[in-house]
Image (cartoon, rainbow, N blue to C red; front, side):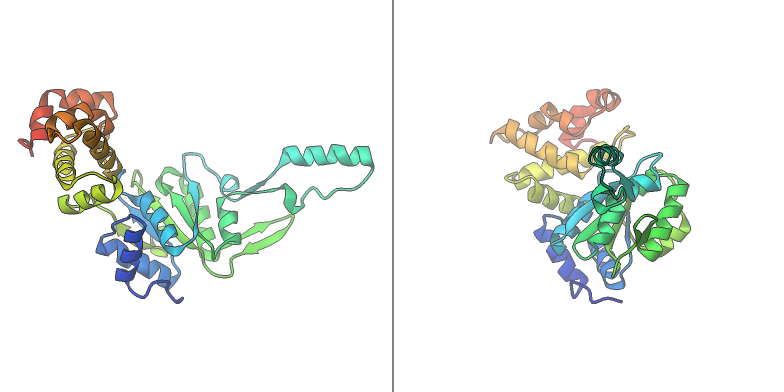
Length: 291
């Protein structure tokens, strides 16, 4: 175990709050243990519950830079580790031919750091976010498991780059596919649910600036009603915050929340099918008549 940067989960939660992120007790405990044990933190949840924001807030709370590896279908090890700048190497060859001098094509100047190599070289000054790991395929996940076990990268032309201490790593997943059990065992884990109405109102007031409590509560009630419907894209917390900002701007002190929320519905529903699905029910949903 390492000496954790925060003495208790509560201290971590307070630091995250100062970074404008309200963590529940489960996330604070999982984050605290990940830091104390030197293990990656795997955070899962439906899209929009604040998984990526949690990693950003953790980096701020630790006073570290955030290094983000965005996963996608087809990503491979080379795109995550490093690559050589072939254009600069070719230019160096031509210059060497003209001048008659020798050049080292595998000098550091020609190396392009990708997120994993960058994180290893700055293990004590960064947080590595491996975002949406479930979008990558099984082969990349197996490679990543090996990386997380050893925290080292072998570059044939240069040698092995190894972190003196495990970097802080946060993995997120929307659970679009099941992750390998070996990867899960390697991490501490937390599932982030949608927050309860009181907490979501707190989050909106924290993140939306000057939004009043009445606005926040009206937005939370409407968003929770929308989440009960079979939408293509259920509104997340970020959309709720944007909706609150927009409604407050449109209402301009008149306290006619239903009208302001209906006029700004495009801030929370961003799919044509979803807009059509709620069009005839919007008054009831925003008015709180449907559950």
